[in-house]
Image (cartoon, rainbow, N blue to C red; front, side, top):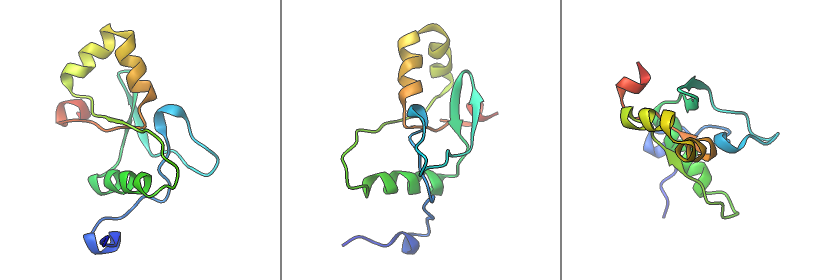
Length: 102
């Protein structure tokens, strides 16, 4: 039996888009900031979890992935086009650590 989201203390976002692949009219983009050529979501942990839970409850199977840029990734993003492309196609980009955020 699933625990309702309201009982977990988390709040789901009302619309969780596929950030790297654009959005649909039904979805508004999550707030983000462009850092090092990548759109990094400006969301709290509860919102990120809500987004993932929303994806899990969607009826159609869609392969999605989340990337978490850290300082090492930022260097690689500058050097490798294939790595940048993977980040551009990611469904959600979440900063991994304060050095990226600051």
